[in-house]
Amino acid sequence: MVPLLLLLLATARGMAQGSYRPTLASPTLGAQITTSTFVLEQPRCVFNIQDDVVIWLVVAVPEAVSNFNNSVEPGTPERAFQGFPTSAPAYMTLNTTLLNYPCPKAPGDITVLHVGIEASCARDEKRPTCNGPLPGPGPYRVKFLALKGSEPVAETAWSEPITLRTARQPGSIPARGSGHSAGTIALTSILSILFAILLAGLLAMLVFWGSEAWGGSSTFSKPEAVTVRRYNTHHVYDQPAARL
Ligand SMILES: *[C@@H]1O[C@H](CO)[C@@H](O)[C@H](O)[C@H]1NC(C)=O
Image (cartoon, rainbow, N blue to C red; front, side, top):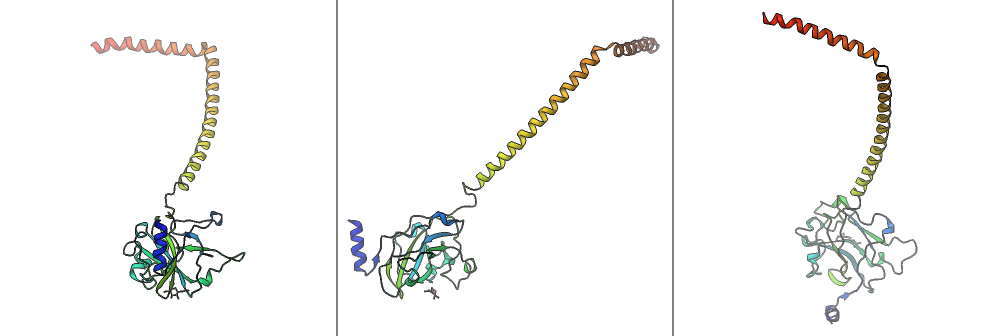
């Protein structure tokens, strides 16, 4: 019932509201999501319009989605990349004519869009439609909006929330950390075993030498007895001297 009402409303406003949701490109293409970029599928065979329109990508914080105003024009401060996400709850970028999204797609066509790859204009206020690096992990929601002049004429649905990688991504650094500790464990084990063998050898040698020494002990005990006797003699002589 609600979608039907929305459809009627959209039709009444002359706005084609597609059910297509922008989607992330297939992971087989490599780095699909980084800390500041993501890759989307191009909206091919999505806009069923012949008009001379320009298709924009809208990138928004999730909170801005529910009452998003399509009539705010790209390039205005409220849609400037440089103000996102503080003064601008969304920005509009990657504008291109529908001709650049031909349908059907030819084999070998590049059919993805790299969002966030234009670092050179990220701080340039004169380029509010900059496709600059995303300011944080998000999440972000995106949609495509077709403008005829400044008039919104068609749009897609909003994407699912897109969350980027963080510097401390669970999948990357702990994996490297555990790999490192595995190496350390292996090295420690080898060193421990070598040390144990060395210690055992040393102990065996000591025991062997010790038993040999105690076995023929007659030569060792004689000087010891002599020393003790001499000490006692000195001690006996010293005592009367101390008394005097
Ligand atoms: C995209 O928008 C910018 C700024 O509004 C404009 O200068 C440029 O010509 C547009 N490009 C296309 C292909 O519409």
